[in-house]
Length: 409
Image 1 (cartoon, rainbow, N blue to C red):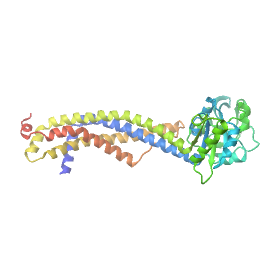
Image 2: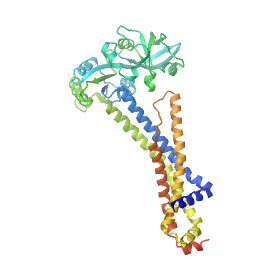
Image 3: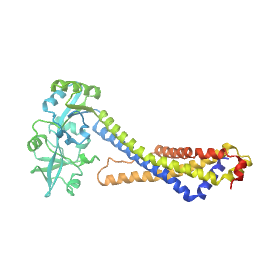
Image 4: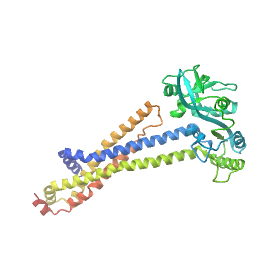
């Protein structure tokens, strides 16, 4: 019996092809937008998780100013705050119980010249002592893929991000090439491995003392990064660092001129912001689903009017109200699910297209997320929209008086 109902629904849809296609437009546009946004949003969240796994869950980041996203944010932002971090702050942090290692990092934007072409790019400057070198070898965007790391005694040596040459100068930078930073010549001794983060893949790394000299930065740091000892909770150590720094910098609680963030906290901030943005965009995209649902409702009312005599005949030979109701609900559900299928296919193609375009421009943080749960969920959602939209027309059809239906012309 149910199989017959599906046959009737499919037959009705194919006999009204143009109307059916026009009805499904709202559904597949809405499903397409929602699927594409969910796919890209979830893919971006997964990329954020991967980036912070590389950074390490045992890391704590201290920035000048009242807040920030640490090493994952724009590192030059520290230049826009009056608060600064200094060597004395780093010394205090190193003495906190639970701190295994702590390093100060200087970052700034500098004038970079290569092959007579001048651009402005991000310059990262860690110290070149043994402790710092051991630390940065554990940080993904400092890992050297070709050449060597900076050494103690290096002065005008540089390590470049893998895509720095292509992104800034439209030509590849190789080992032993000469580049100029603030009109001072540096030799390229290393090339970082690709991370997928456009900021980190286009950066240049030079010794900290050299950076202080050419950028006139005295003892200040842009950020301080901490590795927590095994057996200690990063959140507990972070709280202790806050207490020690408040006392050292003579500031009250909730009036700090610095921020202390664990990797977990920063991930949560990113995900909260991303979640809000995704929810707003999906909400806007869902408006087309409402329009599509109204379209299905209108089509089903028209279908009920056109098939009034057919309804009367079915009722006169024994069809129950529930049978009529089910026939029209299945038909409206089929409109929803076919529109949903089209929307899912287009939505996934669209999200993969965005991923490919982003990758072409070096933005590999955009990854399309595709799963069976996303597909099945979107299909179920579109079927439910179809059924709900067809409920009122189906009830109208089910309540028809068979005698009046047979008289209808």
